[in-house]
Amino acid sequence: MSAVAQWDAPVDLRQGRRHLRAVPTGPSARGGGAQVGVRVEARGLRLTARGRRLLGIVVAVALLIGGGAAAHAWASTPPSVGHSVTVHDGETLSGVAHRAYPSMSVSDAVTKVALANDLNGLQVVAGQQLKLP
Image 1 (spheres, rainbow, N blue to C red):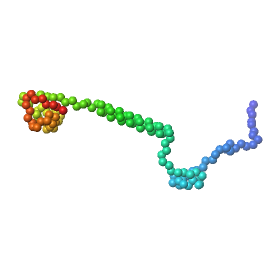
Image 2 (image 1 turned 180 degrees about the vertical axis):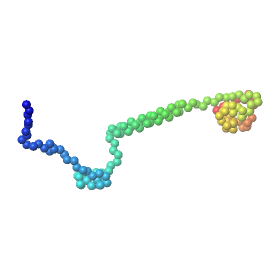
Image 3 (image 1 turned 45 degrees about the horizontal axis):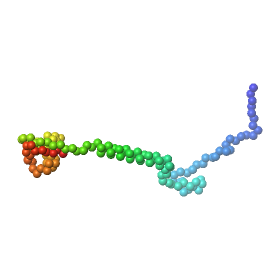
Image 4 (image 1 turned 135 degrees about the horizontal axis):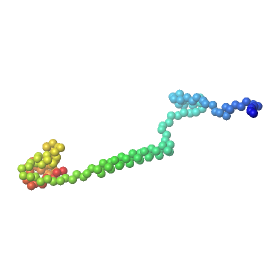
């Protein structure tokens, strides 16, 4: 058995729907809202409360990471602890300096040792204690 329904009046399903209208964009829309009843104004960046919180969190994390990296760099630098060396018989200041700082040039090493020990010349004697910075 089948049933057929017949409506007395035709039904228009689109009666309650709103119609879409084209809205101008770009330079033609600025100040020309009289055409569509809408005023369009250029505005700057507007942050919501959620965006401001997120921006604050990002800045705080960046500061914490930067501060932690700086603290790690300062903490990992060992304090410069100099030690001393005794001049043996027949050694010169350049020999002692070159042995203490083999990666430096001899003249730079001699200057470094001489300044650390307040030496006026290049003369050293056996048994003398020299500070190495």
